[in-house]
Length: 73
Image 1 (cartoon, rainbow, N blue to C red):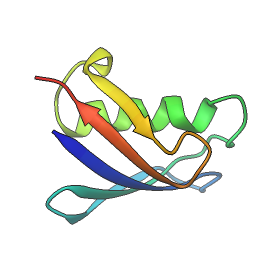
Image 2 (image 1 turned 90 degrees about the vertical axis):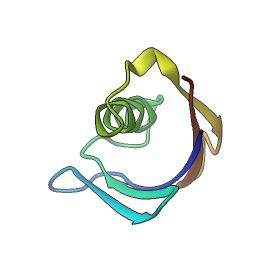
Image 3 (image 1 turned 45 degrees about the vertical axis):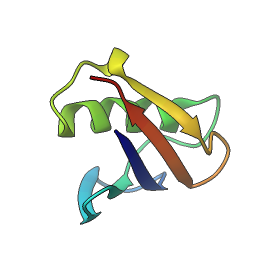
Image 4 (image 1 turned 180 degrees about the vertical axis):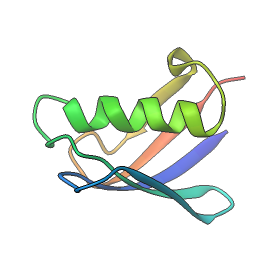
């Protein structure tokens, strides 16, 4: 399953909002430096879909705010 994620780094509080069936908007506190924000977004996507973080992979958008994650079964 592929999920589109719009990320807002450096937020005051973390938030996950489903905007469509296959799309999320996620706010994280981490800065977009050295993959910190990407790692936290990966953890939140895994938590949201109740899967281990190892089953969530960033497919596209490592250096962009619009990302695509793949969730493996």
